[in-house]
Length: 462
Image (cartoon, rainbow, N blue to C red; front, side, top):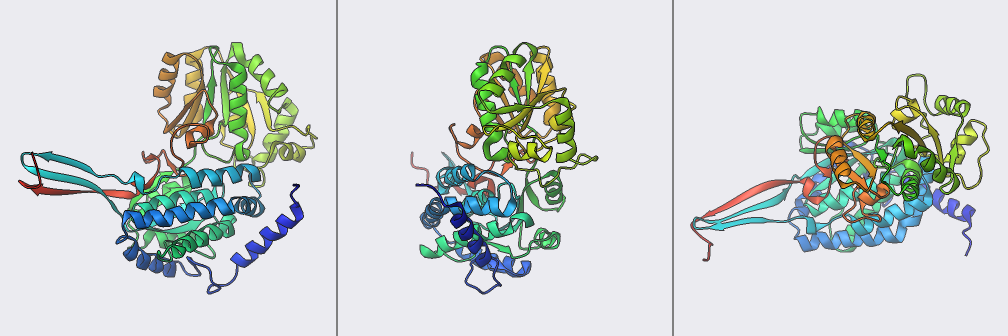
């Protein structure tokens, strides 16, 4: 059955209008004042910390159900409000969140038993957590954080990106509805109607918030880590994909373009550039342009593109972030073929469309004379973020050397970048990847503090 796009758009606009009503209109977890939001989360936290793991999991299960039920609507809302991304891919991301974000199963207890008794090490909640979320993956980050933090026994106060506030409000309201529907408390996650730098500052300085979590650019992460409180920082990346002469070049082209174009390159783990050994550049480019929908841009087109997507100081044009390749080319007067998915070119690593993290389906190829040269260029391009990197090679020794040199939280071998999130690969999903503070892919256990309980000379049965 064909989808009536105008009808869907009207539904989305109606939902957004309802979610922007004044406080007191039946929404859950939405406040006009940040201090009121924090007080509500604090009151709810007193209930949440007393809930059994089974009770928390019951709430989480209902959240998962509601994500599945509203996956398409939320995807369209996010694209409608932010102007970024791909509806079909966002639907997949919502389902991925529902299926693969860890819940209470991530909360485990360690035990030592011996002649002198029994010692337990348990994971306890922090209390009320303050979280800053991006506009690139707004709902997905809300779900990742809410499920993980609730599973650990916390509540959460969100200060979302203003560009995605209505999308965020919908997700937060939905999570609270899920809790209420299974007998849980309201305000397990909260936010404000108009997030600003001031509301963020109030949240970061509030004495009832002991832990801060920032998912976004380097500025917001630095602010959180400078707050004087415990901070988890999920910052930027510029993930390179290395391709050597031992790789299956055809498959590498497919995997890299699939990863780069997923949700128009918005995921921070997505391939942002390629470094390829000289001898395979032409073959790789052939498969990318003839089979994977890549448009090979000329020097003149690249110059126009660079001037369009960033200013003279290297700052990104927000109207270009998360746009598809055809739209970006149209901005410089190029009418691209219908099947165009990505823009590619060959240049040195210093080219601005390669050296900068763009979050657009623009994928430059940097030639390297040999494997050692390729590794050096990849390390330079990743800029020390230690976030994500990818490699296509059938040489295990080289893969190992690359992994050690990059030292990133994520390394995908011979697959698309999104395999790291459990989409076509093993493992769990998250959209808060804390490379800067070392937690890596966060989950419920990331939002706990260790507690040791020691019973001396008792409870040891041997």
